[in-house]
Image (cartoon, rainbow, N blue to C red):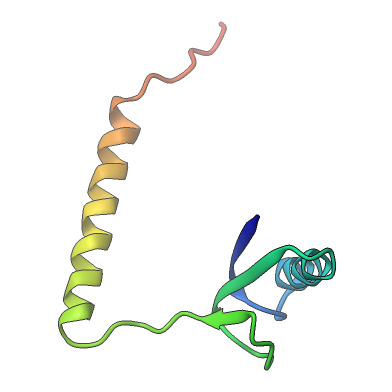
Length: 86
């Protein structure tokens, strides 16, 4: 089994520290675990820092983000919502 944790930071904040502890516990149990973060503060090799794209990669990133945002908005407005009981 492989586990990938997504977090803003590896140890900065309560949720990040909890993720880091969970990650280390999984590794001790022999499970392949990695953390993917925006802000890497440790030297742990199983924590991978997200590198923002540059050049044409940045344009592709913005295009992909825009498409996801548009698709999400369409989904929100087309899915049925539970009706409140009056």
